Amino acid sequence: ILLDGIEEESEATRIADRLLKSLQEPFYLDGIEMYTTASVGIAISDGHYHRPEEILRDADNAMYRAKSSGRACYETFNKEMHARVLALLETENDLRRAIEREEFILHYQPIIDVQTACLRGFEALIRWQHPEKGLLSPGRFISVAEDTGLIIPMGWWAMNEACRQLVEWQKKFPAFQSLSMNVNLSVKQFIHTELIQNIQQILKESGLAPSLLKVELTESALIQSPEKAKELLHAIRECGIRLCMDDFGTGYSSLSYLHNFPFDTLKIDRSFVSHITENVKNLKIVKTILSLCNDLELDVVAEGVETVEQLEKLRELHCMNAQGYYFSHPKSKAEIEELLTHAPDTPLPISS
Image (cartoon, rainbow, N blue to C red; front, side, top):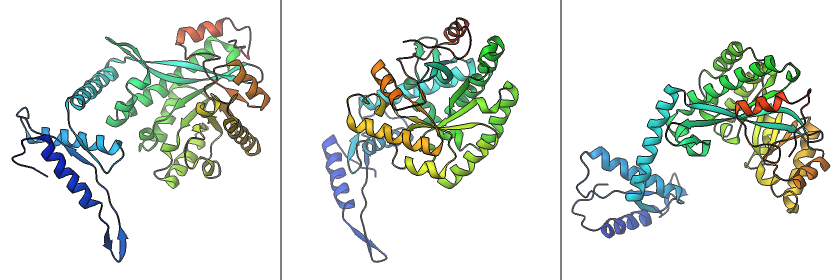
């Protein structure tokens, strides 16, 4: 809607209010009463716009801000939003250059056998070695990478590098041939047309045994098209790779996935583990998940273990594996090699 002759922001917001109220009124479609809501974004031209596309872009950004605020409301594009848009654009441009310049590295967080405190494998976690801002964690750039599609080349690089690195460690440390590598697979990678070809190519080039690669997915990769997801998961399994459901217990339909999808491992979300010693409800949830996994013969990894009390409780519950800061923060390649060098043989004891 183009409003001409608007002198005050309040005039635009009054019109937005009227529009929202009108759209909230029920209407009938084929005799069925229907309801709808709207999110309105407002951009006011004060002379600094040079092209129509610019004001439409800012109104669109304001509309998405309104959607994220709960819908059925309006937002006006302001300086704060403008600064955020510029920051996101800068991050996107930096990410594109980072891919070209190979500025990404992997850190590796150990996955530990709860009963013996021995090393079982690693989860590969991407980091950005920014030339000006230093080492950046995923929280600083992953959302932009997902929104722009850059997560696809980044994700394939991470999988390739993680597989290559594990093979290198197998050669350098012969005692650790059975260690596995967990790699996160983004939604966009999962639905990519060349998913299986890319995975097969990475395994071929790296020489890693497929059974030592564990692909981690979250519920968001499965909910859009469950039947297609099931087909893709079986195709991944046919490559010899193991499947891991990440953040288990936080989604609406997680339990149904155990029946419908061929996962080998569940990772219990840290939100349950972090309060397992003081919250009875969380303890019961973890107990239930562990019992269910035992009946279904699924491996389990408890995420976010940070205290000895949490570890002892997981041992008491006969949990198989865990990872978290109590054992180790994500470590660089050099730090992992230092860890493996001083291990007399496998399995590797990890101390707090």
